Image (cartoon, rainbow, N blue to C red; front, side):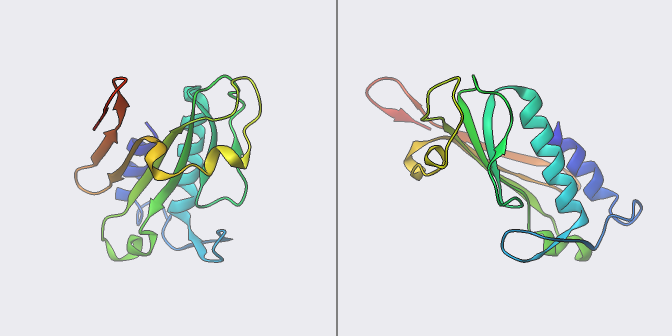
Length: 150
């Protein structure tokens, strides 16, 4: 749902006055674009409300985002709008995400340790490309007990 909203907003950037800087800096010290702030808010809200994600790490936030879903099994790392420098020149942007199983016990708070897992521990990852037609590319990994499959 968040991706559909971001795609709609991206297609109306000039009409809704959401191009240009939002006068915020992200954790890399870069000026955030208005559409990046909107995408970050939408994805955080959707992941919180879905109740399947414990915490979230966003490229746009310095701190771990607590969803309040202590029983959730998964954690998400996300760049809500990668390629935001393309917004004003009409080149597609996208969302990049990675999903891991939490390491901490269900019902407890998440720590940074949960996010310091290697790439081989991912259970899913993907990206969403925005433009005239939105594209979702998603890859999940599952284990049948003896082998891993994509």
